[in-house]
Image (tube, rainbow, N blue to C red; front, side, top):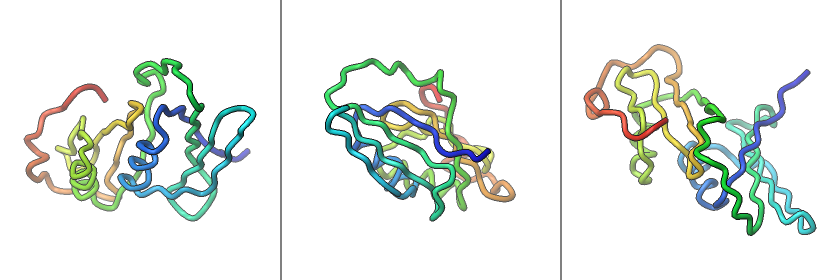
Length: 140
């Protein structure tokens, strides 16, 4: 058995591509548009392999309520420098819901409210400001 992907329904494909690609550094691997079904599938991955992909599903013109997305749980990504990753996302206007006060873990949310956990690669970094004293914001 081999893990293939996790599918996330999105309301705004462009906003989610900005978040996952520009913000988190994922790469679009392939895209499928289905005119008859009125949907677009975009597959993203963190590296050159096609393993462990995220499938963004955009249903054209749908007004379906996907809820708060807390029932999904979260995606998790290992990052080389958690402080730099959070600073980059924050510079894009993305809220750091759970700052990396411990130098190890942070949470943000996608435009469609999917929780994304960021974990420091290797050993945790020493606590640093502004993160060490930053409170949680919203839910994550």
